Amino acid sequence: MAEQAGRSDMGTGLAFVFGVIAVLGALVTTVTSYMDAVGGSDMQVVAGLGMAVAMLAGGLAVAVIHAYG
Image (cartoon, rainbow, N blue to C red):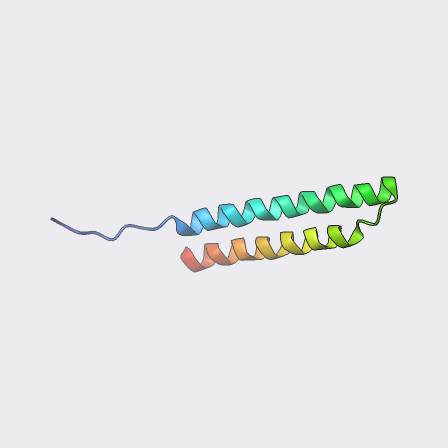
């Protein structure tokens, strides 16, 4: 039996997961900042956390592509 090492799709899968997390973080930022502007609720901290999660996940997505690519 011949054994061959195949390419792993882990980089693509992890980049997709982190990309989805980044999009969700951006949506949290958008929704909470809109709620703060319209309703006057104090949602700036949640919007900031959503932005931090989006930036971190986006950076990890790019790093995973380079690490496994």
